[in-house]
Image 1 (tube, rainbow, N blue to C red):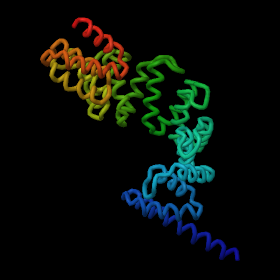
Image 2 (image 1 turned 30 degrees about the vertical axis):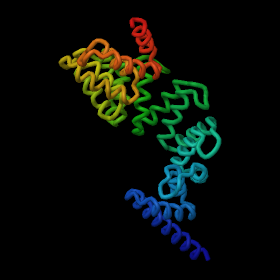
Image 3 (image 1 turned 180 degrees about the vertical axis):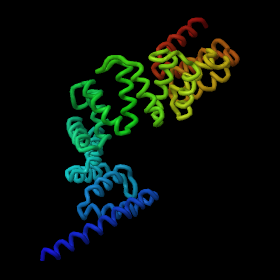
Image 4 (image 1 turned 120 degrees about the horizontal axis):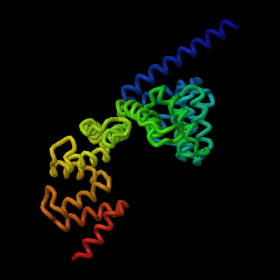
Length: 313
């Protein structure tokens, strides 16, 4: 009987190993319905990684209708079965109130579990919770500890978060050289906010020699990746002639891009261009239009400029 039981267990094991392989291949080929079917079979055979994958498919609406309740259900099952990645996913669902009540304390518990069991995304999320005081008392020192674990595990966003801590002296002594190190790491991994922060260090000579040419490279990298702060700063470089020949038309082009992308201070700058006739014909109506956009976006100086224009009429 023991031999038969062992043989059956091995057969079942090989079956859902096959199911997992088929599911993974199907997922990588974007055949989500097929992936869903085989992850379901493997999960039914008690493969917890497959249950976690099912939760992710429900979360993303891949191969099935998006259903956060089911996502939470499968993530819970997988997390209880010691799948660290599923614990991270479950924490996210609780943190954002998806598939049930929002619960930041629960979210923190699951991020902690994920991190403790080796999921570096869980460490990054736990660092974020301490950084922002979400479900825990704000604690920059603890945030740093968890961001370091995540950054060492190649979670680029956490490297960026570490850079911010060192730049702003939060939980650590201010250290621009350290900030630069982490911003570079994250920027190279395509975290565009990090490229912007790196460019600002070179612009302001914080921890590095002032170097507008290097700053421009990083602002361009960010702007090309649709970061509007990068586009805005490129506009300023062309307007002021920093590391490039002064060119108001180029400046307007980048400011326009940033304004249309919702970076309201850029709209105010465009208002100034039309007020002063910088690279464009003076146009009071256009100036008012851009100041109005910036004012609606919460940029107070633009509201004041609108009032001044009305007073001089």
